[in-house]
Structure formats: C-alpha cells, structure tokens
Image 1: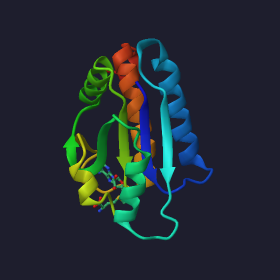
Image 2: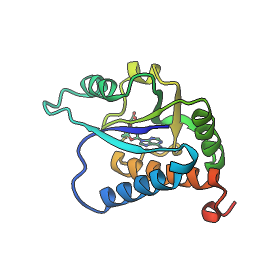
Image 3: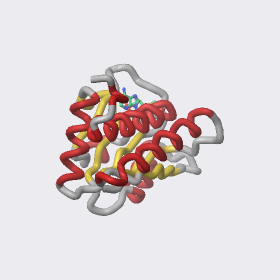
Length: 155
Ligand SMILES: C[S@@+](CC[C@H](N)C(=O)[O-])C[C@H]1O[C@@H](n2cnc3c(N)ncnc32)[C@H](O)[C@@H]1O
C-alpha cells in the first residue's frame, strides 16, 4: 500500500525535514512485512505565486491515479490514533493506495476539498503546514506500530 503526502512548498534542510524523513523511513521499513508503505513526500511549488487554485491544480496532478484522496484540513474529522490506524488498515486490506494532501498558507481550494474521500483534522487550531507534515509522518508511523501490536503507542 503506497502512501503519498502531497504538499505545497519546498522544505529546506533542517529539523522538520529530518523528522519527516526519519518517521516516513521508519514507517516504510516497519510496515514492509505487513503491507504498509512505502511512504513518499511529493512537494509542489507554485513558483509564480498564483494562489490556492493554482496550488490545487499542481496538487491534483501530483496525486497518484486511483489513490484514496485525503485532505488535511482543520474542518475535517478529528480521530484518535487507534481509529486512524484502523482506517489505514482498512485501506491496506482493500488494496488501496492513499494520498494525504496538505495545503499552503491559504489552505486547500474548496474545489479540491470537495473531491476528497476523507478529510482529517489535527484539531480546530491551524498549524503551520510544515509542522502538519511532521505530525502526519509521526501519526503514520504510530498507526503502523499500532497495527503491528508493538508497545510504541502505549494503549
Ligand atoms: C496554514 S494552513 C492553512 C489554513 C487555512 N486557514 C485553511 O483554510 O485551510 C496550511 C495547511 O496546513 C494543514 N493544516 C493546518 N492546520 C491543520 C489542522 N488543524 N488539521 C489538519 N490540517 C491542518 C492544511 O492542509 C492546510 O491547508
């Protein structure tokens, strides 16, 4: 089950990128034996700063065909980590690939939000999009550990 994170903007070298790479790498390695992963980060850049609609077009183009589309959005569903793991496990069992879309400073254009199969919120507060990448990467790793039955999550 391929997991893709499509995000607006290029993250420079630094602690956030290190964390994302570390969690996605661990998610892929740990999940390999039970059908989870690999996870890839795809960054899109609206070089001419044309705004949310132009970003949405780039994001949509980057989403792998046939993948379940999940928008990261503060207006989406708030779920527990075990519930998130169960959803991920369900998609894996149904042989679906999944793509998480993270918007830029203005968010995800409504037209793209309307196309999502699911919308996931990390709470009503708005987080910087670069931090949302880190948090999502950690939750993916955590979900993999929950599905594997390891003590990482301390249920
Ligand atoms: C700075 S936020 C943009 C917020 C903007 N007000 C909006 O309408 O979406 C950039 C991106 O980070 C993600 N994000 C920020 N806070 C979030 C939250 N609480 N839950 C899920 N995703 C969030 C979303 O993908 C959002 O498009």
